[in-house]
Image 1 (cartoon, rainbow, N blue to C red):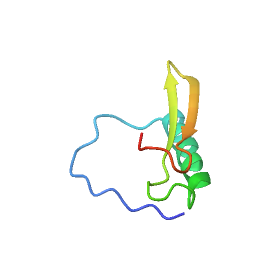
Image 2 (cartoon, one colour):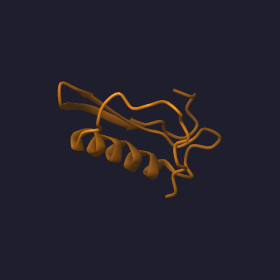
Image 3 (cartoon, rainbow, N blue to C red):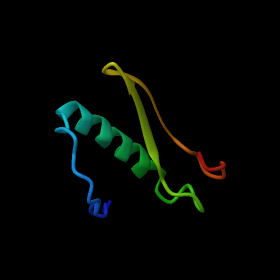
Image 4 (tube, helix red, strand yellow):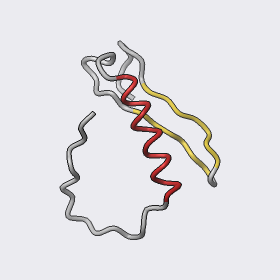
Length: 67
């Protein structure tokens, strides 16, 4: 899966932790599983974390309204 580089001009407010990177990778993996199955919507993965505890992870199934 190719991901376009971020072209934001905003300056980061802090370093990204290894934990944050791991959660982002989980969200990308969820999105990857949905590739080709969500038309006309994009493949999107979501991971919800609170106080370091993984609460949920999901993607929108085919033929569901946008989230």
